[in-house]
Length: 427
Image (cartoon, rainbow, N blue to C red; front, side):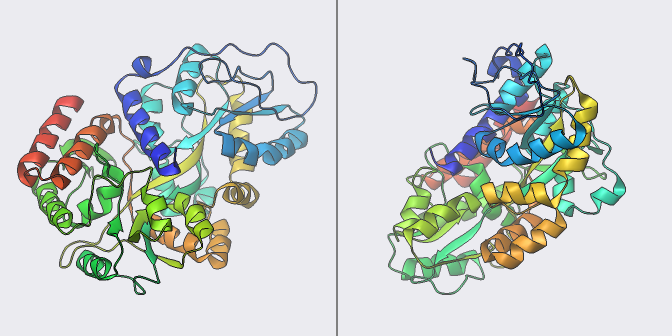
């Protein structure tokens, strides 16, 4: 499964959790019985539910496989400095589900590492606590990263990375970055490539990867309150902007720039094989593109001529304090003293190069890598992915609407129906 496919699976799972944690979750794991005798990290085997049994350590951290490995050294240093035992445990699948379930049962970790759009569901399930992040430390993070971990005007975590999507181009086929979507289509068609653009949709659609184009034409997901929080009563899907976007999508499909045959499983490989002039994707695509050896460049996704700039959805990755962790004091100290440091940001960046949330670390990363600089620019100029539970009702209807429009359905009617379905789902 490609990383982009995993991202969509995660978004779908988050939506499921927002509707009902009991319907999507699994039983909590039992705590481990044997406690380590000295400061250490470990990754015990997982239970049948996919969640590890809680290690018998003073501080327990749950993360996915990649982040667990990257945090091992950080955890060891923190444990030694504070005279405590620390265990970093890898949860290979359904981390959010397993965390919420285990936390409810009192068998979960003290710290969990995950995406910011989990926050609404985790707060709804009373699974995480707000964090008192001092103003001096807040100033060290990018504005978009802090916005991502802010929910109902409270800070709920320490961000470590931001992520968004940008436009890859095969410079042998299309040397110059397009100024508009119309330029992209024209140059892509003239390039001789089999596909002017690889923007994954598939038969179920993909609202995340479509969002930059949707936003340029005036579409939005939810409006915002005066305080800057997303307002679930102000739904953009089905409104005039979304219908204008749908009409643009229909035009792109007629031009051969949008196809449901291009999916999360083949979009990156098609570009790497030279079969697409352009690719819309994220930092997870760079390794495969570089491995293919093609000449490429990155630039922001352009908007439609005479319309708004294209704004991708920005995600934030962060550390959170579990509400029922056994050692909240150690957990909070770890977030403030260990997670929020350039050393930790560097370790996580080396594991997977996504722009750091910490300004100093980001400056070093962007100076050394042009791709990171473009992705950081895209994230900073994007819209924070809504973390409100109402997003549970958005992904499937909106994605299916995009796919239907690409396949020839009436744009206005299809988008209006999607809005009706979302309203029915969120109540």
